[in-house]
Image (cartoon, rainbow, N blue to C red):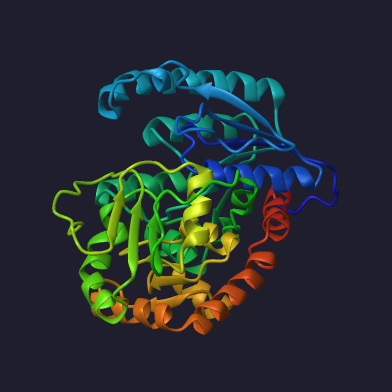
Length: 381
C-alpha cells in the first residue's frame, strides 16, 4: 500500500491487555501525542504499584477489572482472567469499531489463538493493524510457543521489531513477509527521571553492580552468581544486587555469597531509578533476548552496561558503542568485564557518555515516535 501523502493527525489505539510493557507504552503514547496525534492505550489496571501517569494520551482499562483485584496467587486467578480477557476483547472490538481509529497498534498478544481471529476480524472491518514483536523469538516456552508467536505476527499488516536481529528472526524463522517488517529501535525510558526521589532499596557500601527486572532463567542470574567470587577476589568491597519478582525457582541460586543481596519483589519506578543511579554498572548476562527495557532504563539514568553478546545487544554495541559485550554463558569473561570496569572509573564514565549520546539521539522518543508514525502512514489512506 502506498504511503499516505498527507500529514494529518492520526487516531492511534495502542493495545496491551496485561500491561506487560507499560513503561514502553507510556513513552510511545507520550511521544506520539507530542507529535499531535490522538492516542489511547487499551490495557488493564496496573497491579504493581503506580503506573506512569498519562501525559497527552488516554488510558482505557477494559481488561481484568475483577481478577486483577483478587488477592489469590496468579495461578489461581488464571481461569478468571481468561474469562475476563474474552469479555475485554468483546468490549474492545465494540468500542474500536465505533471509534474507528486510523491505526490499531498491538504491543502484546495474550491468548494468541483467540486473538489471531480477533485481529483478523478487525482487519476485515478495515482497521489497519500494526504489531510490535518485543520478543520475536520467545524467551520462554518451547517450539509450540514459537510457532504460535510466529503465526500471530503473520496476521498484521506491519510488524515492528527493535533490531536487525529481530527482523531476521521474524523473516527467516517466523515466516513473516519481509515487506511487512520494519525496524524501529526501543526508546529510552526517560520517564524514570521524573520519579520521586527516594533512597536506594539497599544500603550502598561499596562498588555496586545491579541486575534489575523480573528474575527468569534466560536472564543468566546463575551465570552472574558464578562470576561473582572472581569479581570479589579483585574488588573485595563490591556489592551485587539482584532485584525483581522471581518467575523461576530461585532455590538453587548461589545467593548466600559475600556482597550479594536479593530483593525478590517488584520495584517501584522510584526504587528502580534510585537503584540504577546508585549503581556503578548494570550487568545483563542474558542467554537470549532481542532487546531489554532494562538497557533503556540504564541509558536513561546514565549507568554503564555489561551485556551478553546475544540478539540485538550486539547491534547496540557495534552501532552506538553501548556497553561491554561478553560471550553468552561465559562466567569467566563476565567476571573479568565487571572487575575491569569497577577498577577503572574512567572506562565507566566513557561508557556513560556514549550511552547518553545515544539516549538523546537514536533512542530518543523524538526519533522513535517519528519512525513509528512513518510506519503508520504506510497504512493510512
